Image 1: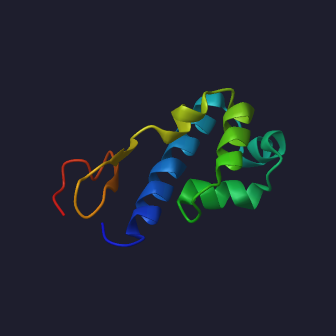
Image 2: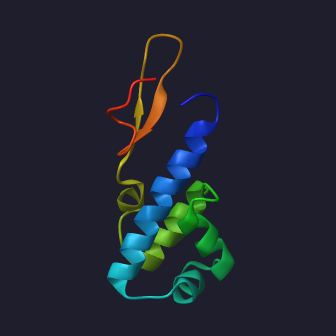
Image 3: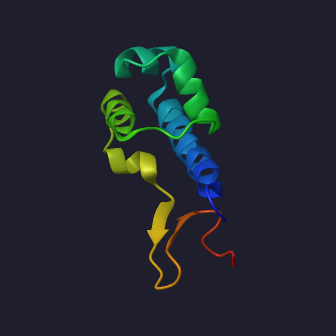
Length: 98
C-alpha cells in the first residue's frame, strides 16, 4: 500500500467492525447515531469505509455500542520497519507483499 492508500483499507476494515458489532447489538444506524451523538449519514459513511474516523468518534461509537474502543480496531495493525518506514496492515493485507 503506497502513499495514503492505507486510509481506504483501514476505513473499510473499521466499517466492517462497526457493522458487525452494531448488528450483533441489534440496533439500527439511526439508533447508533443518536446514542453516539453522530448523524445517521455519518454512521453510514463510516460503515461503508468512505470515512476514516477521528479518535473522538471511535470513543463515541465504542461507548454507544458498549464495547472497548479496541474492538472497533480489530484486524488493524501498524508494522514498524527500519527503512524507509512502517506500514498499516489489515486482516486482508497482512500476508501480502508490497
